[in-house]
Length: 114
Ligand code: AMP
Image 1 (cartoon, rainbow, N blue to C red):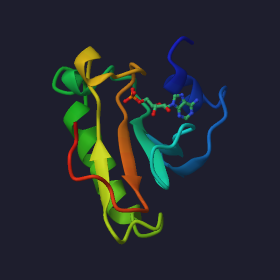
Image 2: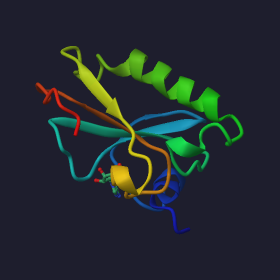
Image 3: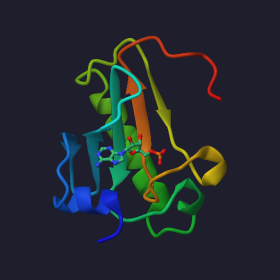
Image 4: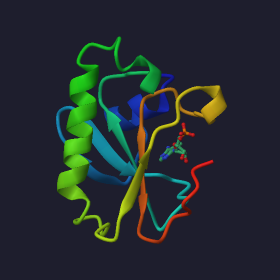
């Protein structure tokens, strides 16, 4: 399996899981860039945000991921606010080719995004 996030989903690479259901997984980023930094990923392999429209069930899984984030953020200590980011393609420095949403928080974040 050459997709690292597919391997995490399959359990062959360990991860610090925060949430899991039949469609998605949330686990801690292993190189955190904020006090709280997790990744929300669909279990189905979708390469990036640029592929959501063409992926079967793409819109539904993105809606589901954001719904779960809105249900769980307080449990994750993010009552003060949080940021959700997805990097798509080389100009955005996407480094893992499996759609993922960074969830950042637990501290004030800089107002500028780039
Ligand atoms: P991006 O650069 O937007 O593609 O984000 C990929 C993220 O995956 C980075 O923040 C990495 O730190 C994170 N990452 C890579 N491998 C792992 C892993 N095995 N466990 C947790 N996070 C990882």
